[in-house]
Image (cartoon, rainbow, N blue to C red; front, side):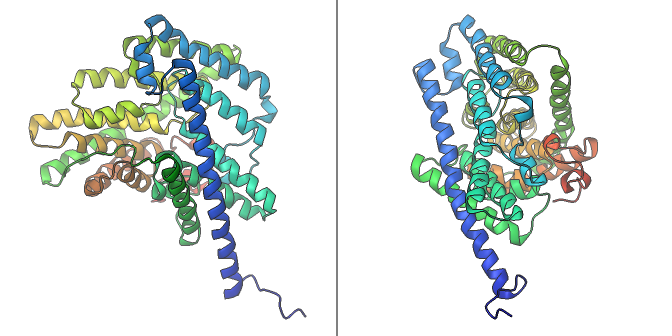
Amino acid sequence: MNENKIEPHSPYGRNMELLRMLGLAVMVGILGALAVLAFHQLLIWLETTIYGLNEGLVADAARLKTEIRIITPALGGIVAGVALQYFLKGKESGADYMEAITAGSEIPVRTSILKSAASAATVVSGGSIGREGSMVQLAALSGNMLGKILNVTPVEQRFAVACGAAAGLAGAYNTPIAGALFVAEIVLGGISVGSFGPLLLAAAIADSVVRHISSVGPIFAATPGNLQSLPELLLVVATGITAGLLGPLFIASLNYAHRNISAFRLPLWLKMMLAGLFVGGLSAIRPEVWGNGYSVVNSLLHQPWAWQGVLLILVLKVLATILTSGSGAVGGVFTPTLFVGAALGTLAGSAVQHILPGASMTGYTLVGMSAFLAAVTHAPLTAVVMISEMTAGYDLVPALVLASLAGYYISSVLHPGSIYARSIPQSHPTQTMPSTHL
């Protein structure tokens, strides 16, 4: 009998396993941050090369002649569609990070790189889709590759991918706690101390590396004021209920577009070109249609807007997002979702100020973001922490909680599947128990 054998269930064995997990989380956090930074630099280089400046896609669109603004998303759709249709064969489509975590699927290197390149083409040409999807995918890929190099067990391999996803989200949005919560609450389907600690470590390290290299702060830094009086809180709940009613409509619209556009007997590049042309046409009305909505959210938080302008851009942006995503474009809808929530919150704030003239418009914008995010992701805890970290608006937490819970419960009853339901098996806890994973 080997006296030096480590029993896996002994205290020493459990401690060694924890140290292995923490060490893996540290390495994945660093690699995930570098993946995020690399993709971000690629987008900056492409934008500067194509438009001559790096002032944001909305500013780029506003400077272009109308006819150029219309055709540019279509050209990006052609490039992305050709890459996906002719360089990425159907049998090589592979798994995204959610499938890899929940089902233990493989993340092919070639597939992830090609999809990220296609995503970059869509994003930089003005497609209404988020860049964060590819950032998280590449960060998760780095965890997958590290696990292979270290020859870890299948369980540790999935854990490395999960840490990569948390690191990617934290690095993309500078939200370490929300990055870990997103993976735990949405992808893993629950929060346990044993798994959450390493996820949080990977996310925190990724956030620190990104902040150190790029010198960024909260991406939506704002002064939201307080929403504490009883009338204000009642109106906050009403805003959350509205988000809960509209969230399922947004999810259903995206799902409808995915099903029906994919059914068209047209080449993928042609479908993506036509969707891009439609997005370009919408941007001829308002250039804010271009991109993921990041700059518009910042504007809503820091500048006064007429409600008519907000409503118009909201309608145009939702149409553009549905078409871009439904056409088969690679990218996330997380940031566009934040935009929709911000616009809804701003509209709610405009209405509230007729009743309570001293109410904080910025506060209601953030409440709308949190409530709508909770409504479409079915992850209210992630939504509250995400908005708080993005804006450094921690004084607003009680109002965010009320709005997010209202949005979540209403939405989960009306539409049990979240916006990520297509990527998560139906047997997963987040699909079978939508009302208990908080």
